[in-house]
Amino acid sequence: MGSVALAEELLLLAYENESGKATGSTIGLDLGMAAAVLVELALAGRIAYVGGTLVVTKADPTGEPIEDEILGRMAADTPHTPDSWLQRLRHGLRGRVLADLCARNIICDVDETTADGFNHLHRYPTVDPSYEADIRDRLSKALIGDDQPDERTAALATLVAAVRMEPALGLRGAEAAAAHEQLAKISDHAGFTGAVSMEESSIRPSVALVVAVLVKAIQTALGTART
Image (cartoon, rainbow, N blue to C red):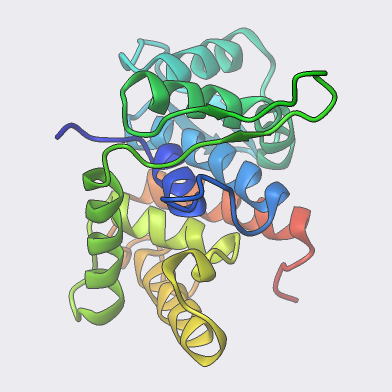
C-alpha cells in the first residue's frame, strides 16, 4: 500500500465507504482540502507564512501533480493571504482529488446520471479500504494515546477539528464533542493555535505557523472562529 496526501485523507474520511456519498459540510470539506494541499507544501518546505501572506520559498516540484500545479500557480502569482488562497483553491479541487483516487483504484466512480442528462449523480464507493483504515487507525491512536502524533497526523487531526468532521469518525453527541476537544488539544500541543509558543511546539515552527493561519482562515470562512 502506498500513501495518500492530506487532502485525499480528508476526502476518504468524508465519503461513506458503501454508499460513496459525501457526508458533512460541503464547503467545510472543500476548505479543509484546500488547506491540506497548502499544508503539504509547507511540510515539503515549499511555502511559508511571511508578512501576512503565503509565499513560495522553493519552487522545485514535489513530484505530486496537484501540489505541483498549485505550487506553480503560487510561484507565478503575487503573494496572497491564507484566506484568499483557500477561496482560490477550493473550487474544482474535490473533482481532481476524486479523479486521482479513482485512477489509483482506491475508490470508483459510479455514474447514476439519468438518461436525459438532467439529474447528475456520481457516487464514489471504496474499492481498497486499507488506505482509510490506516487513516482512522492513526487518528484513533492520536485520540486515545498520550504521545503527541507526528507532523502529518497532528495536521490531519487539526484539519478534522477545524471543519468539524468528527461525525465522519462515526462519533455523535457527547462522543463527538469529546473527540473535538481531544483533537483541539493535539492542535494546541503542536503549536497550531497559539496555546504554546512555537519554540515549545512539537512541530517545525515554519509548518506550525502555516497550519495555524490556515485553521484560522477556515474558521473565519465557516463562522466558527474563536472570539
